[in-house]
Amino acid sequence: METSAKPSNNHIGRKIGRIREMRGIKQETLATELGVSQQTVSRMEQSETIEDDVLEKVAKALGVPAEAIKNFNDEAVINFIANTYNDHAASYGHYYNFSPIDKIVALYDEKVALLERLLESEKEKVKMLSENK
Image 1 (cartoon, rainbow, N blue to C red):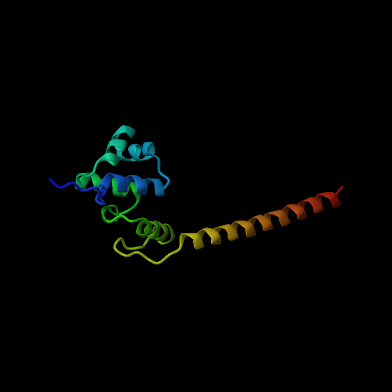
Image 2 (image 1 turned 45 degrees about the horizontal axis):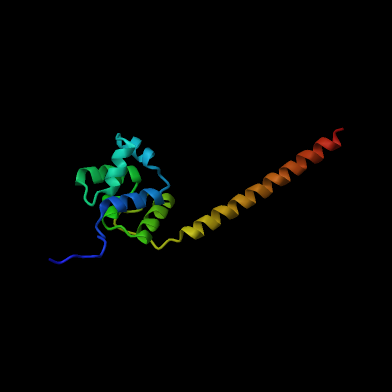
């Protein structure tokens, strides 16, 4: 009798749970999207295998193709999510070399510029109001 101590890399439920977490989706939200209970989603994430039709529904609710779940690895999913967010025309079979950190930095810079413009506008408003007194 031979026993394997290695964890299975094909545990679909764990992959679904990891993708759900990466997307910032709670089990309750996914359950609502699928029309099932939170407990059903919990059991699904504990299951090593899932029927293809159920996997398709879960993949659609998570916003990733079923193949991304089956062939899950953190880097590929991050790239897919970033590209889907950035370009809704991204093809499912192609993962671009995209840095989510660069996108976060760019969004932060845009926010800082917007806040600086807002501050200037408020200063002008205060100046105009103080001149009218």
